[in-house]
Length: 246
Image (tube, rainbow, N blue to C red; front, side, top):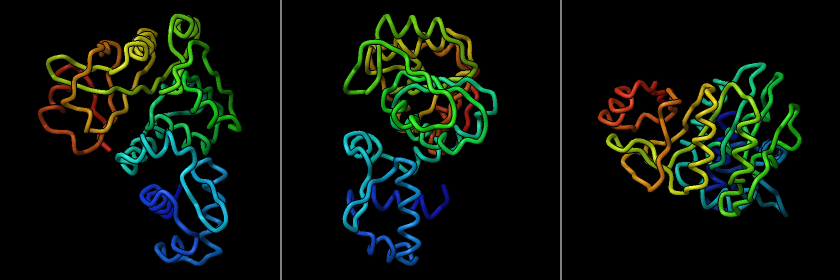
């Protein structure tokens, strides 16, 4: 995705729905160019077009969860993509940033296997040129993910060498936490597999505390942004966690 595509997505995301003419004016390109750009973004499942307008695809997920820090989450996703190599088997948990990582993976050149508990991510990757494994379990509609004992059994019986996970909060005294008990159980089951585990989180999550513990003993790397405070960064490093700042 080039810089203009990122600007176009930001404009569409901010305005909810925008005309093709206005996009051309705001990006200072011709109508032919903007239509070609929108065709590419539509093929990649970012936007949908109708009668001279463009809007973000899947309003429920994209508008409510990705409106917040959209550009930042996209940067985190693109950086995470750079950590995936030919031959990897990659587990991707749910969440808005991980969904953006899945979109970026549509451009991945090489043989990989992607494993997920998120039905939305699996749908995004339905035309991917690599194998996609969707675990079974109880469907949690609000997160578009599967949870529960069957999901944990699938995790235990499957092998992957990298995982990308989300968290809801971090406190130096308490550690990482999640707002949903069943999703926290899924993450902890993944962490117990001994893969190279990456937590993706924008800096707004640091300082927040939620009820359910996510064990950090089995992951040593976190991907976040440059706005993380010095105290929070030092707290992570004191726990032996490598901090990737994007």
